Amino acid sequence: DTARAPYFEMEEQDRQRYMKESAIADAEAAAEQRARRDKLTAKEGESSSMRGARARVEKEREHKKKTKMRRIAEMDPEKLAERRRIKEQKDAETRERQRRREEKEKAVAERHRKLDKAESVKASKRL
Image 1 (cartoon, rainbow, N blue to C red):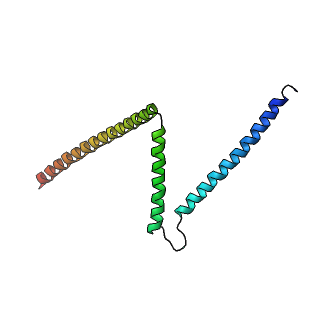
Image 2: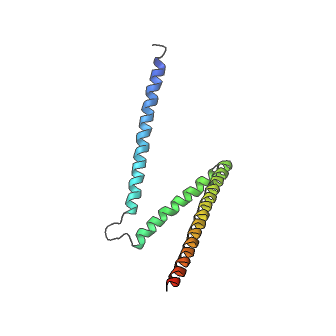
Image 3: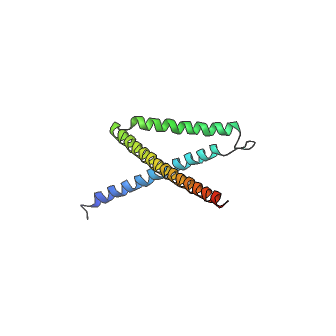
């Protein structure tokens, strides 16, 4: 056990460091979340439809967009190309589903039109 003692000590130090860093990170995240929530709520004398509240929300959206653009710029080109390829594939699949659905709807509408026409012919023969 004496040979392992330094490792147990290092493990304990590592665990304490991790707990301390985790607590700091959690506090920062909670503060950021609180600040974001406060920005989005209407203050005294404001309503959510006032220009100031909308401007704050818009500023937050703009910040998110800039952050996203920065992350994309920093991303590996191969990974970015793969994401684009996957997105294009999903879009193509969606368009194909929409096209098939429209064809089915068109066929059903045509069938209904034929049935209505046949019904009107029968009705005119009865008269």
